[in-house]
Length: 396
Image 1: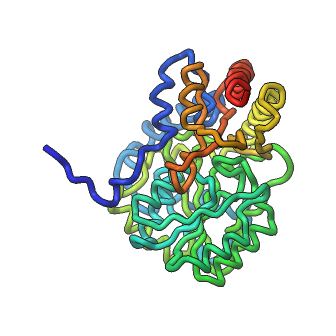
Image 2: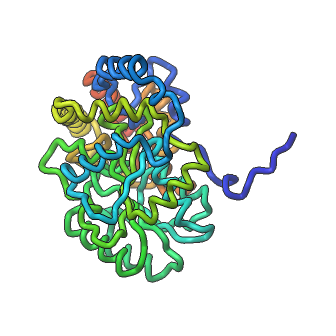
């Protein structure tokens, strides 16, 4: 049978990162391409104990259908964490538990965006969000990133030149893929611009707790006195991504619609993983667990940055993140990183070409993303040296 694919999905390409994962079955390949948290930080024993206790003592609550809004104790815990750690505490806010942070983005877009409506994104930006916007027929408008976040003048220009803009999507803290953190001044400016133009902000903050240089930045949501910001996050980077437990905090009116939209998608997030997450974040050592994550990533990032300085040609620029998982590099010339990345894979090192994170995926791009969270120090050094040899060869 020949299937006629919907217009909505016909031009949406698979994630370049997920495609790269297919070649990683080769154990010889050093992967600097993923965005996974370090598996040695998973609280395996604690999760096993919690799951066993729940299934023995309260199996019905864990295995029966739950409410779409989410497991009530976890929702209350999330509200408490948001108030304590992020200063998010407006009365108009409500919270929904979602199946990973990605679903939070998708539900917000489903509720707000009609085909042809404009969505402004940082460029480069998270490929999962870009594909979500594409799948709903949004008109993607890229605004370039600077060292301190989105170019505000270009943002104003984009709003002026495009109609029906419904959303500004941003990862202001340790951005994926760049590792850049938006300045407080730009956060305030972005919020005011969105409010003045009646545009919703999706603030995606999966990496905010992973700060290892300096203080945490205030979320844009903490500045929100008007219900402008839809705040999306998850426990994927501080517990385990396979649990698929995320959350959205937004004005109760949009959360109400997201609840209905989620009922259409998957009814509710698995209750057992919600219970496990709730039990763990209530532990007195949860803060220490986050501190352990920060220390490990600080070390791994410094190892990669030192290797880059040692082995990469000087013309290659790179970001220096204060937290998160990623470093963004650019060859700064007429280079096609898609082809170079394939060649690097043949040399047994994987990285993600920058085109995957652009509004126009087919446009030649000389940039690429590196990740340091899942590989050993030795493999980071070896992988960066191989990449450096490739780049020196190509540039010469």
